[in-house]
Image (tube, rainbow, N blue to C red; front, side):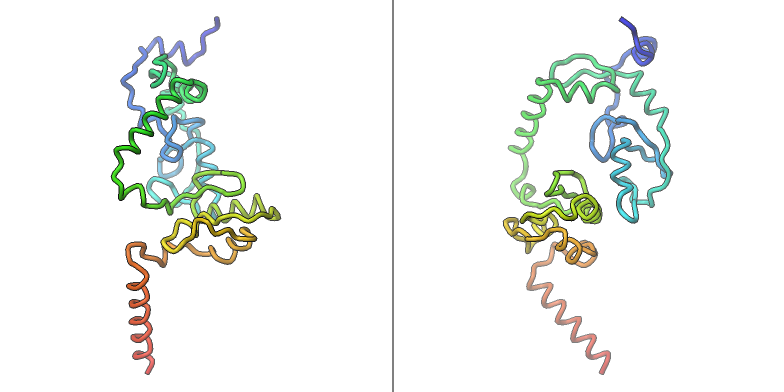
Length: 229
């Protein structure tokens, strides 16, 4: 059987199972890097994750929030993926890190391991935490594309799904304190164009209830009037 360069390098340098997986994990998808790319601020992402980050009109780094510029192969990360290995959390097989992601995708024991881990974490989760909605990333209701921020969701739906009809729940509205998770917009694309031209995060304090927000708005209005007159 032919041996790849990565397998030969791993044997030459000594395979290590104590490798820090966090150093080889994409901060967006939280998986082992696949086609790692380094941007100008030095952070590294999977090739596909970087493409997703570049979709908004003003793309920013998902780690440091600085303007997203550049994108070159992270050669040193690729070499580490070829030269190190780790044991599968399910079946225990030792796998080169570059191939670990594809191995996990087909390993039934690993899938069972993940399922049990998720159930255990959900069981131990504090009740108050499970009720906090995710208002930072959304899933496209048309095609189930994941990890889209608000601007990314709007752009994705307009670009990919304009003309597609069907009553659907707006994932942005349903995550808001006043949102109804069961309310379906007759024309979701038009709803996104009109309702979500700006981010709620810019104007809304989610920790303040409606009565407090109304009182604050009234006070600001009265102050504005007193200044004018």
